[in-house]
Image 1 (tube, helix red, strand yellow):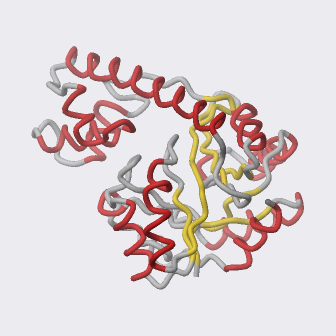
Image 2 (spheres, rainbow, N blue to C red):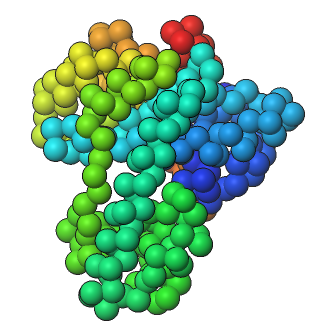
Length: 279
């Protein structure tokens, strides 16, 4: 069993890289991809530990991109080996933009009476601090009852303190991954939120024409009908099917490593083999 979508505390997960490896082995996985947001730090830290434990670790990443004015997450897998210094330098630029957004978000929260300081957020989220870490602090300080309320009331798109983040154009994300010998894959396509299957299919077709190489068929958000729909579409376009739980540890307690939400994820080893053969 494999899981090609997971997060460590290098981005917005709760597990350290070593804990994630241990939890993967405990879940019966023989292969895992760490796909932290905008950083390879979790993968870098986990690799020697995973090697020593006999866990097959695939280098991955997840980027937030802009496609037709909508945020679309793009997974990247590097079966030929981890990306080189040029790609890593580009990631540092993305991380700098993330921090600029956090500065503005902290100021906006202060303006609406929420006393959250950036240094407090960075103490939790380190260099990859983001909205989930702001939300955790709001819960801890008693401004909201739970993480969902923090987003709904303050930091989601319609929240009182929302600050838009500059995101990479989808085609640039694809081209950067391709240049680094990576395979770009659209994450959880159900979140595209298209009004019809025809519109959804047209968007995925366009993404394929821009160089996307795979489609996440299995995900914790995908019911059986969605998995069938995306599997058929991936086959029609010649896209590599992928899948994973999108595990975040205790930050998303309903999602289990390897098995997703209520056991709706069971990614076959053959999908990882296809990624590796394409790389």
